[in-house]
Image (tube, rainbow, N blue to C red):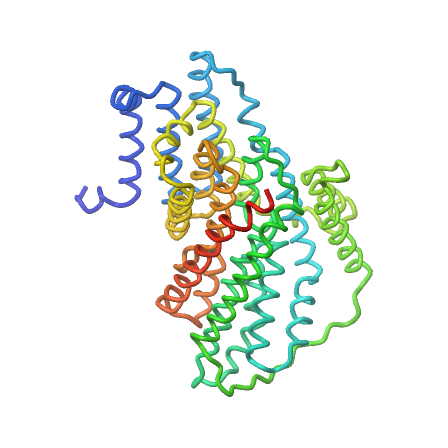
Length: 456
């Protein structure tokens, strides 16, 4: 075997994992850093999980299920030997708790909107009503993309919006760069739109779950109160930035969008389920129904009425739900072993709150540029929860930044879809995405320093 073959990424990952096992068997971490046996095991699980999530050497959901397996059969006995009260239910509940039901309801709701073309009808109707001025069309694209991404997968939204807008973009003259603005507006607005609701992106749900464990209860409506104003400001700045970078000049866009016939009976039922669900989520703090129970209602209503069938059930993004559960399960192990407290002690908390906030937000932005935002949130939020002050704002800041970093084509699925459309080059997406990321970072910092304290 040649040296080149030995140093392929898969072999490097294997060497790292074997090295971690050797450290465990020789008590290397325990001897070098003075950590306890449960903390040593948690460090090994954390590093191995991070390596597998970043490299995607295994499917993300397989890694998440592996976290559950090793924590029950490896970490749990070590915890019990140390006299720490823990059982397997502490880890299992992460895979089917209230947050999982909430996200499941969001996926089913998105499936309804897609199958019965409600999202497509809404998008085309709004775009058609904006007129032919390029500035207005760009704004409508940004608003529609972000609005839909608040309630359904931003990946599905980006794919649908490109299907609608591609004929228009291809019809623009070669002399204008405004086509770049449209192609960038869709993924960037989809990314930013996800921060608006708890179901918009997994990091939001992860943040809510950890805060709930710390007795900070944020309702669905409260999340929207704290996130939507920031989202609207960022979308406005995105609009202005794209117009500055790719001015339309005197361009006039003429387009026709196919007309839809009147809605059918089933489409009205889907709209009714959508509105009832939104109302249930927004009033969950007053009705006594948790957001997870409202999400379960969506599942029962959609499949019980046969609006969705078994093939639709199979197409739900179960891998995201398993990754969400795996991250929460990882956090349980980090907390029970005491590792989050140990890591939190390494962060220079003697500095001002702003320094800690800035450090975590920048780390979130950098990590999310190269890996899944769900994985980033799963790795950083448990540490933020363990910090002795401002943990609520720090957790929210991390979750918002995880959805707002969009420098590379691989940073988010909507970016990948936009890059794959053929309308953009890497440097165009990277330069624009970097500016949007910096704007979002500054906006999140200002919101955490001046707006969120007014709410909490």
